Length: 258
Image (cartoon, rainbow, N blue to C red):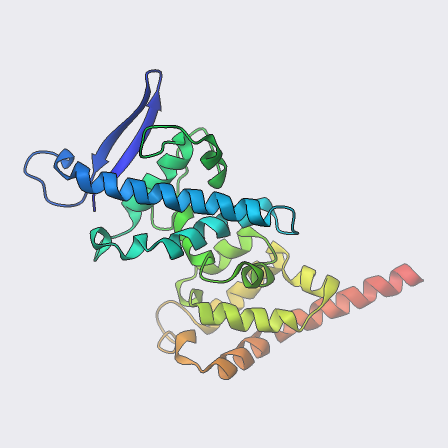
């Protein structure tokens, strides 16, 4: 897969082509393919920006909204299904997207400064960039759900998204649906408490113990369950958390009224 990697220095924008494809001399041989993909990535980022603007003002944290908007734009763009990506890892694609956000570089060499907000910025390239679990891989995964469902699943906390994504056996969207169904049975402060990052992380540990990535017990995964059976299994596994939070909430209310 050839990609265009943008850079910005004192003289302005510049680009290089990077690819895992075979070359005779240099990766520049595939610049035409890289240019086509770069133009498609313009559309992905423009679509994400438009989605953010459409939803801004609703009760969704901006960091969560931006990540979801980017992920949904990637899903809908068809970029991942392009011939250039068949049997290819997405590492270079994520690296190219990250550079476009950091520099704001359009395929036309014009600068779109608003893109910089679509990815968390730092002085150095983030450790995840182009790595095993890149920010854009997280976005793509988050974008598999509708925004309302994703928000209801993770409570708007990006840390919760990472907690689930980093456990491979917990990645199927069916499990997110089952988790959301269980969370929907809890209201108000109880649900908010369950979705606090510290509590959510403990719940993910329980689910991972039930569905480990490898070894004993790893043969049957969430994808092997029917919807109703998976929901029942999740509800049973997480019931102690709901009971503990209800008890804590009740004690706090009792103390306050006394």
